[in-house]
Length: 169
Image 1: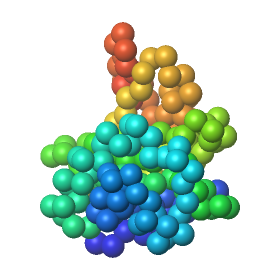
Image 2: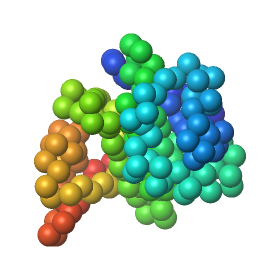
Image 3: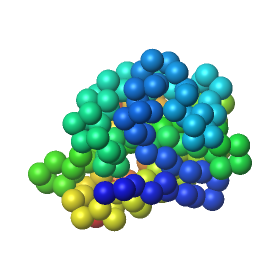
């Protein structure tokens, strides 16, 4: 299956390939530059760098992105990466996936998080293998909680540290 970029009003979500993952793991941007994508050093974030080995392992096995790895969030106007959004793996036997996202600090509170989340949720819900989208965020992360709620997710539980969310197809 060949994945198409997801376009919104202001963003392009671009699936991360094996070549991009390997390049980023070496802290290189040559694979991004081949696509005309720019980064100013704020991305990839430390959180993104932490998940790259997991994504690399998945992509080494499958060779091509399934869509359930992660996607770069790129601004249309300057083709700059401002964050990423993705999954903790492919849908499980119940059709559940868990989603996460993050933006570089300078691009927060501008509506990009909601715009990217809504777009990836629409893509996710169009996949036959998905029945439920789950997410969590820190209790004190009110901006993320607000984005998840605005995107239609419902709080299903919370503990001292985390709020747990889901959206049923």
